[in-house]
Image (cartoon, rainbow over all chains, first blue to last red; front, side, top):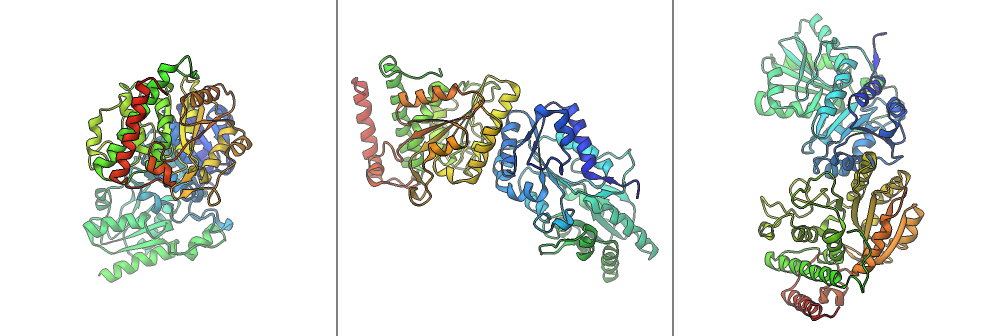
Length: 313
Length: 292
């Protein structure tokens, strides 16, 4: 477990590097610079760091004004407030205004664990996927995150980066290259495709090993960019397997599972199981126990994949 | 030029501004009549003189280069008054009057509310109240970072002072000491549903803005001398944001609306439109005869 890295810490270091590389980058905080790991940037670039206070709905609007004048503002708050508190502002002042604003949703999904459902984000991807022009990315490991921070800044247009606060094992080796709009096949297999995004990608890899022991061949596809995500990308990863499982720490409505289901319904018409949070508010507890409760776990993914294949045979 | 007008010395300029305002009001009335649509006549007519002063003489702009980096920025936060902004942009030379032929129709550059990506001269997309002002704050912050010569101006309504985001931005702007920002509040006393007093009232507004640590000025929003004086003072503030409370009349220049305490958004009857046009014509004749 020693090689696990805390994504929040990795983000903070990458952000500081980005600040050195690009003087247009401005960091906006909302009274939680410590939780968002922006303190390194704030120390290195105090003239480009602004703490707006406990004012999450002002993050997107102030950022839009900066972006319309050529800056690259990066808004930081807990994902749940960054998205749903400021949703109208993100829609009107960022997306409709075509403002080059970057929003980082920290401690996303259920990774705030004990803090409880008020702080768990189960709907951020669903809410933002419907906004025209909004790109959505989420990293599965430190290698991907480091590249993602630079790619997000380089992308011309609004981006939401969903950042879980959790330590994850490495999935990629350093030669990996993250690309906006592309999926990432992590492991080959020919019977079922396991699509996963974010910090739960490693669960899909472990599940693949367990399925192999049962004689089932699973392909693992990391989906780091939830938008833009073309049907072609999904079809290319699922065309030659019989079934699919989508895995995410997000509501089963409108997130990765929704995106995969949309493409499968139109082009592939193969069975799909969606692993994620059902239509409910969550609970307080340890993140791992919460994931287990909602079936975002290796045994549950394995069962779902095996059952799909059984019913298909 | 950003200076206070003097009623005696600048008589000709003031007459020219008044004539321009009359022309803008007439254009708005004809626009509504021609397309037979409901418009926010109340919100448009209360803000016309403010927009006329800004676009005729105050803002540093180049209509030939709408994206010129050193221009002053203007955000119409009360986006429902869009046609008033379009008329002033047209008068300033950003686009021809023929642009109004397809007003609010498919393919038009003139949307129901201001759209930065479509309309030359529009610096920010607005329509959801309480957002244009904080976006202008972000612009002013950018100007401060660049030590740029330009400023960000925004016009909000008193109804918009019901929005929590307005006061959130007001707090932040003061904390950030945004002195490249001038906010004009179109204080016409009414929101969409009518008089605000006793229902969704926001007064005393001057006390509120002062309490939020803003340099606060007040003026008659239909009087170019009063308006330009307040703006000139607002320009001098340092390390503090400035707000100008412009006292205005909803429906100004539409006698039927002024007589009947009308709300903002309506289909203007032909007779009331004709009455308003006749009144504007009379005002214009009087001005051209040398009256005031």
